[in-house]
Each structure stands twice: as structure tokens, then as C-alpha cells.
Length: 314
Image (cartoon, rainbow, N blue to C red; front, top):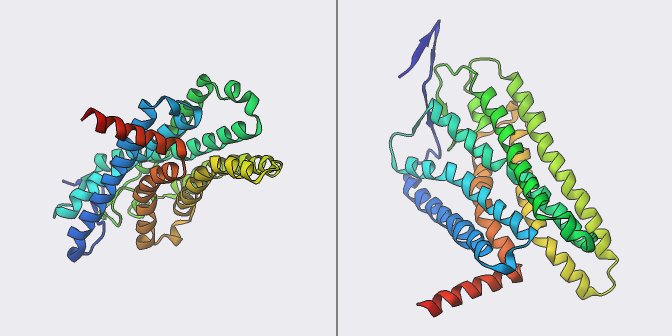
């Protein structure tokens, strides 16, 4: 159904073009289904459950890691199930309000990730540079406030972008060249001025990422100075291993949203953006549990204990 307004037609639904390769739809369905299963296993059944049941993982670092797994699981779950359905369906449409809700919830859960990564960097800084004050500085109340502020910041960003995107008029053209309702391809369909949206995307959105990145860089600058003061090589290795996983996660996550959301529309490339979007909406939630478990003795020990107790009980 379409609404007629003055001399143009307002769309009431969008078509998600996705990956327009009919011969590969089944293959892509199986690949992304496997990746989504890995996201569920690694984040929900893996890290989140281990952190909840193991008393040795009840520390500030794992409190932040639990929330990182939660947002990874949530924003991928906003995107992937609809994408899987579209691989097998001829009808790839999504309603106007369904599109708005998908974009809103994606941003609500994806945007806090940068804030949580910044909080984890600060946690590493306090643990390594001020260990005597660690329990005071990173008390439960402060940890909770940092996470609450992360979710508030993500929700505010989501509300701003969603509100300004869906007060625009979308006339006649309704095919989104993407596998979900993302901002750059959506703005290209609007028949009204999108300059405010472009400004918000390139300044407000990127400034949040840059501020979080600066906090991370400053934290690790002081961490590096502290590590270099340690005389024994084993001490340096042990101290650096505490933050190596987090640095890896920051390195693979931080650049992709900046690349997509800070560019002008003239540089938008649908195929390139789809590949990058797959990386940060699906691949990163798969990788994060592996990054934080393969290099982490506490998590590996907790997993062994959980498997041993399950085997003994059966």
C-alpha cells in the first residue's frame, strides 16, 4: 500500500535487496546460519553463562565483557534473522515502521559497544597503573554507572539518527541496496533534503567514535609506560597479556563504523558497504568470544570446569 501526497507517492514499505545472487542464496543462508549459531554459542552459551556461574569471573573486567557479549548478541539478532528469512523468501519487503524499528534497535545495541570498549580500556589502565586503588576506583557502583551511561549514550544516538531519518519523505523509490535498514542506503532513497542527516552522520556519529578511541589511546599510552618500567620480561608479558585481547577487539571494531558513517554520500559504495557491514554486524560478534577466551586462562579454566561438572553430572 502506498500513500498519495500532493504530486508524489510516499512509500509504506521497503525492499531489502540484500545479496542479489539467486544461485548463491542457499549457500549464503547456510553460511550466515552457521555464523549466527556461533554468535549464540560464543556469546550467550559461552561467555555470558560462564561469567554468570563462575565465581572467579566476578571481576570488573568480566562485568564489562559480559555487557560486550550482550550488545554483540543483541545487535546481530536484530539483523541476522530477517536476513536469513530473506535468503529463502521471494518477498524481501519490510514495512516502513519495521524498518525504523530495525534501525533503532540496531543502533541502540551497536552504539554502546564503543563506550563499553572505552570503559574496558579505563579498567585496564586502573588495574595496571593504579592497582592499589583498583577496588576503590572500579567499585560496583562505578562499574554500573559506566555501563548505564554507555546504554544511555547508545540510546540517545539511536533516537537522534532514527528520528531524523524517518521524518524524511521517501517517494516512489523503495529498494534499499543493503541486507538491513542502514542509514547511508536509506538516505539515498529520500526525496527531501538530507543535509542535516549527513551532518549528524559525519559529525555527531563520528565524534562519539573518535572520543571513545581517544580515551582508549590515552589509557593504553599510560599502560605502555607502566609496562616498560617492569624489569622482568615475564612480568611485562603477563601485564601486557591482560590488555592484548582488548586491543585486538578495539583494532577490529573501531575502524569499520567510522569508515561507513563518517563519509559523505558521494563516496557511498553499496557492495563495499555490504561487505564491511557483514564484518561488523556478524563477524565481530563471532570473533569477540574467541579473542577473549583463547588468550584468557581464567575463561579457559572456567570452561573446563563447566564441561567437567556437566560430564560428572551425566
